[in-house]
Image 1 (cartoon, helix red, strand yellow):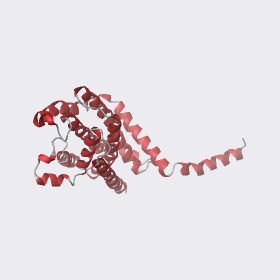
Image 2: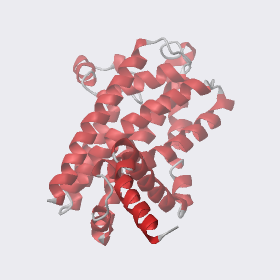
Image 3: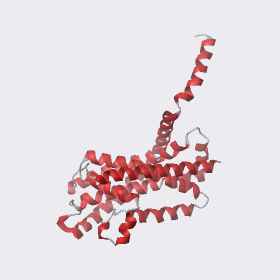
Image 4: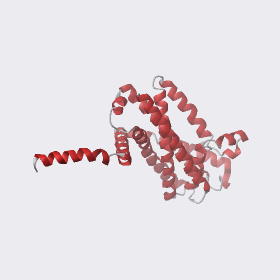
Length: 278
């Protein structure tokens, strides 16, 4: 190949490469790169993944029998206490996992590595989505482990329904992770504020979603507030799916709540990154 041809080929590549990596393809490639980078950090410390299973297993082992003693053999909403309680635990894992996305960012800000990431040509949305998806991978592993662990104790596994439930949680987790990311950027100069807001918001949302106890037994004001909580619809959808049904309308409402949370979270998160980078 002549020097002219080589120069022509290089010029063509320079002209086509940006076009090939533009739009959806570039976003997907950047998101994949960010997610793999974050997962490599998890793989270097696999014991954190193992120990993260302790809390949900403790909840499952201690709280489900107590709930069973309260409701008796009739169960809750026609299902056994274990079948009713386990989806709530899976949602709890998702909320706590994605809520910690911002804490990792705070640590990177202290080390200065976050500024180096911003200097790369990665799209801002891919940074948020990639980090949130990284939290989704351990969620899938943890959810499958505790689901399989509960099967010998009377939990009926509907694998296809569980996978759909995890997909809904993945969409919701992207939004929740993006909001945590935005909170970390806002509170980067006062780290305690991140933890104060994160804890003050997370626990009321979980309790007002009916994750641990049926809200039908609560006061009227609590039931009214819970209807404005998107997590309520996610928990209801997960319970319907884990009970082995696709026809319950609460699944659609749960999917819509997940999509709405994802859209709001990405809008807030991307906006926070752009304002911080100015």
